[in-house]
Amino acid sequence: MKTFEIVEMAADKGLVLTTAESCTGGMVAAELTEIPGASDILTHGFVTYSNRAKTQMLGVDPELFPRVGAVSEEVAAEMAVGALNVAEADIAVSITGVAGPGASGRKPEGMVCFGLATPAGVETMTVQFGPLGRDRVRSAATRQALDLLAQAVKRA
Image (cartoon, rainbow, N blue to C red; front, side):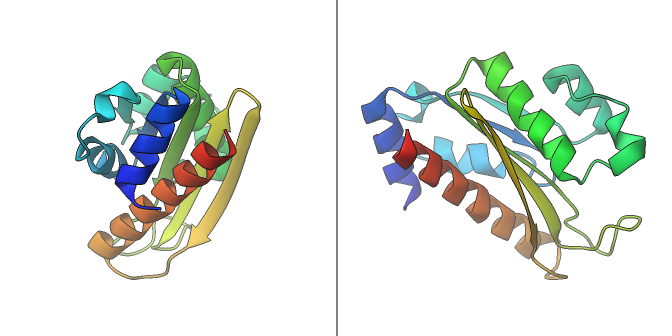
């Protein structure tokens, strides 16, 4: 589904979307806001690049970071739920990953965790994009997040 179709379908259904982004730095929100009328469906976009921002803005439990790391499905889940609640949205997508170059601790370059939250609950997934380089990992993660939003909007 193209980005404009996500925006149109969400608007037709009266849905509010939000994003919580780390390694993509707002790229998903930027894609959505390229579409005229996106302000009807996207009220918030959170760029929480640091662990501190994830905790302050989205309520991620700071004890998760030393236990599982910022790049984890647990953190992605809390980011998505936090964004959903703060934005009072219907659907939230979150992204946290290692864009590179190189690995981050035990997490390889290209490992990206996603969260998708709705009032019905939260789903997570991890995708190993591989060592594609920073720009390509970020672009691939953005496309994956938009695909997750598209699927959620269709189901809503």
